[in-house]
Structures are given as C-alpha cells and as structure tokens.
Amino acid sequence: MIKINKINRSFVIKVAQIRWGEPIGGVERVLKDLACYIDRNAFKVLFVFLRSGGGYEAEMHASGHGVMVIPARNGYDIGMRIALIKELRKFAPDIINEHGGIPPLIRPMIKMAIHAPLVSFEHGEIEVNQRRGKAWVNKVNGFELRHFSDKVIVNSLLNKNLLATHHRLPEDKIQVVHLGIDLNQFVYNQKSPITSELIIGYVGRINNSDKGTDFLPLLVSKILSRGFRNFRLQIIGDGPDRKSLESLVGQRGISGHVDFLGMQPNVHDLLSNIDILVVPSRTEAFGLVAIEALAAGTRVVAFATGALPEILSGCPDAQIVPQGDIPALADAVLNLWKSKGKQRSQEGRNFVIERYDARRMVGEMENVYKNMLQVKI
Figure 1 (cartoon, helix red, strand yellow):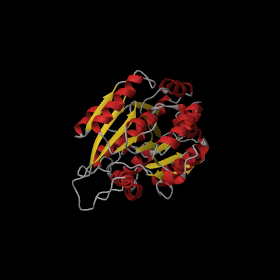
Figure 2: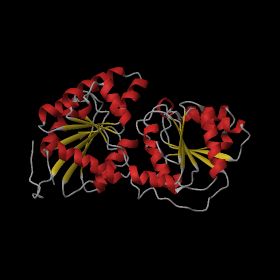
Figure 3: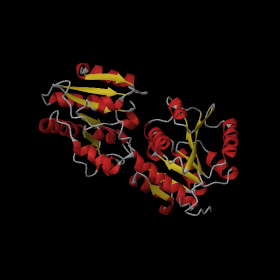
Figure 4: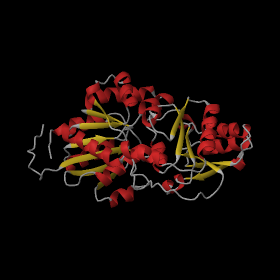
C-alpha cells in the first residue's frame, strides 16, 4: 500500500481507464464525466480504448488527458492484449479501472503483468448476458471478478445484490456509485411550447430485447383506442431493430403518430420539447436517460424494471408502472397529460441536482482510488 502524508500535494495518482469496444449509453457518460471533472491536480488519467474509440474519440483527446486506441480484430486478439500490456507498462498506473464488457483473460493478464490494484466498473452486464443467452460469459466474468479484481463498482444497489448472489462476490468488495449527469448540458427552461400536441418521447437504442422498443407501437395503439389522438411519439435514436420497429408501426397503421428522428447530436435540446418520456425497457442497469429528462423538466413514465424503481424512488415527476403493462403505461401518460399538460416542472430537476450530479459521481470514484491506495490528499 502507498501511504502519502496529507501535506504532500506533489503526489499524483495515475489511473488507466480501460474500455472494450465503442462506448455507448451510461459507460460513455461515465468516461466523459471523468475526463471533464476529475481533479487534475491529484490524478493523471490515460483512457485506453480497445478496438475502437467510438464517435467521441476527438472529444476525449480535446479533454487534455492521454487517449490510446488499440485496434483488435475481435475479443480474442492476442496482439491487442500484448499491446495493452506494453502501453500499461509505459504509463505505470497506480490504479487500473476497467469498465465492463471486457473480453475474457484480460483481467488476469493485467494482474500478472502490472502490479497495481484493479477496479472493475460493472455496468449491468449480468442481465444483458442472460437475456442474450450468454450464460458462459457471466461465469467467466464471475470467476475473474472474484479472483482478479480488487474492487468492483456498480451503478445501483440492484446490481450490487446481483453480483453478490450471481457471482458470489463478498459485499465488502462491491461499492455502489450512482451515475450522474452534467447538469450544464441539461438546462431547465420554462418556455412557450412549440405545439399544442402531447409529445411523447423515447430516447435510446432501438433494441427490442433490452430496451423494449417493440412496446412503443402497442402504447400508441392503446392511447388511440382510448379516443385520444392529439399526440405524437418521437423516437430519438437508432439501433439494430429500427427496420422491424418501422414495420410494426406501418402494420398497425399508426405512422401518422410516430416520428423516427434517428441519431441526434443535441438530445438535451430535444428533451426540453418532450412532454413525457417513456422508458419501456425489459432490462435497465440504471436508466440514465430518465435522469436526463427530469433535469430538462420533462416528466417520466417507466416500467418497473432493473434499477429504475430504485433510481426514481421519491421523484414527484416520475411514475413507475408494472413491467410490460401497456394499459398501465397508457393510463399513466394520459393522466399526466390531463393533470399537467404542457407545464414543465422544476421538481424533477431538483431531485436530480440532489442525487445525480456528475461531479458527485466523479468525487466518489476519486475516493475509491484514494482509499485503495490509502492516500490522503
């Protein structure tokens, strides 16, 4: 263990952040928030992307931190593993933090080659792997997390319990760090509405198995069956099931009420024009988009799945309905519209400010690193 006197401000903790593949969703936000808010006087960070740096690689370079992209043919690429170890040895990190989804045997190689504590940030892979029929991946991850990770960070109490039971990890090895958002990006504006229609929104990947996007046409049909027609559903995002979802919309004859907006660079601006965000996920490790919507003054209706009941508990502008219950989802949307209309809410934003500020999340991760090294600065 490294013990540094409190007065010694010259010591800088070197942290290597490792991510496999192109970051999306919550993982992407965690890495970007770390790049933005980590204390540069106390930490030096190298971001290592295996296979791809994703669409925001240039933004990460602009942050001023070190950024390394190591190409890989696939998850079993030996050359990628050798290159990773070489780069880590050059950087000589005090802490290594990997962010879930990492291919097998990388954790053991890191522990054998680099004498530094390994922190694993598990972003909810257990349920996703189970749903996709990859039970063997969970078995490998469980073995590696038990024997090679020194600390495991999870983004919810739900995921802590999953790891403790499914991977048989001791509870004192797991630490909950709730995700956060950059509140400067999601600004609350009490402005005049651009339309009198109810705007229902979905934001995220178009993926039926995880995100439940195939529930959306059912929701539109159910609302229409209640005799209400003055609304539109805006689907913001893209994904592997977009064509099948467009086909479902066409088959049900509801195309006049559904807009496919695709990927959008300024989601935070679009959120401020949505009246009610729906989160119809079948599995959700955290549900960051719900937090983003609340910060923009948008109300949220979500299925009671994954960590959403935990994350949204106590929020006056969020309603949780039973998983897969389309009539309940439609009722919640219509009741909110009848009672609140276009009126935006500061209460949801206040809820987010108190609990889910990105700076709070980064500060908690900094403390994890310091505590592992027994550093006080």
